[in-house]
Length: 485
Image 1 (tube, rainbow, N blue to C red):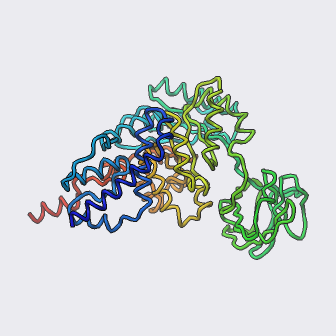
Image 2: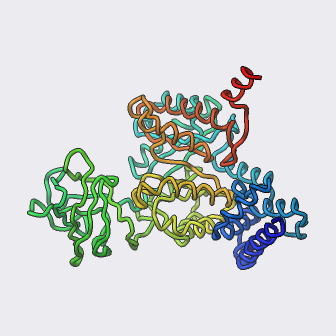
Image 3: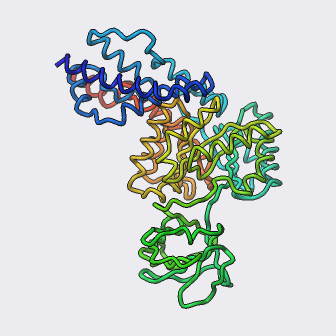
């Protein structure tokens, strides 16, 4: 049995080292601070390209590590198992062990998000609303409550309001001696509905009915037999294929493309999940399964860059599709006269998931960068059923790449809006503690959300480090042993 285990493990190691060898040019091109991380990522990808479940069972039965919690140092873990089985590691093959990997991730998170008082809990990022531009006391309260990073969404408001927010934040930080990083999200090509030629703010639709998707916001439309909806981005309808899905309003309205003629697509409405059968202006449009030719960096984003580079510590790159998208932003930032904010890759498209390893490797051209799991658009793009699986996979691969993760979208949203949390969102918030940073959206009860998150994190933090479960004493077990000893 042990001989078979050794042979299987040696086969895995051969694949890891072969993958590393095939990427030597890439490794040499990276900053020294990223080479070990990228090498570990390559080893992990080689391992996860195979089905090793049977091997894991056999390792567990033999009382050995099953490799299931070693993302950050996978080759070191494998060689440690082989050593326990009597095979010493080959010279020069060890890259980073658990302690080195942990220190690397912690250092990168600190570089991105700053200092914090409690290392055991994630950083907390709060989305700022426009009202805070003139509400200094509320910003100071957020800092005192535990906000580590302030998020400004460039898709809303303007530079004058952003500047007021930043001035208030810097003043509050100086007065309280509490540091806070500034994160600015580029708007990206978020496609929203228009109602060309229609004087109303909404159009009535019905399940099983038809809808014309025009090629641009200015395409002819109006009060016709078939309602017409335009989009804020030109040329979208012409890129669609028959049978493709089109979703409106965060997936509440689902349509199927019946045919495309020129720059107009005829849609059949297959599902309406909203309470009222209306489609309003300014609602998001998603095209799951369609590969559209869209630049991730819009003209508006480019116009925002000088301000962002002058004020932000972190820059969120929305709707990333490919490594070329990232390289384009890196080149622009390199030529910017302001400071160079660290890039946060927002994973919110099906293509970004498909190309995720390539995105990470391009990101590693920077000495430090991060990843945001933007679960809103990502769930619509992939289907809600896949989110549990995909967010875990992103977390695993980011740990292998020693890349800090921001967990975003709908964290304790019901609590934030109504003051009362649902049971399921408390569980979701507990799972978010596996990330380095958790993002909260705007809401009426932000301070309560921060306090609740900190409470959840403190409780969860004693039970695991990333996905490695730790055995602190369980109150249930301790009470039983004391009563029955």
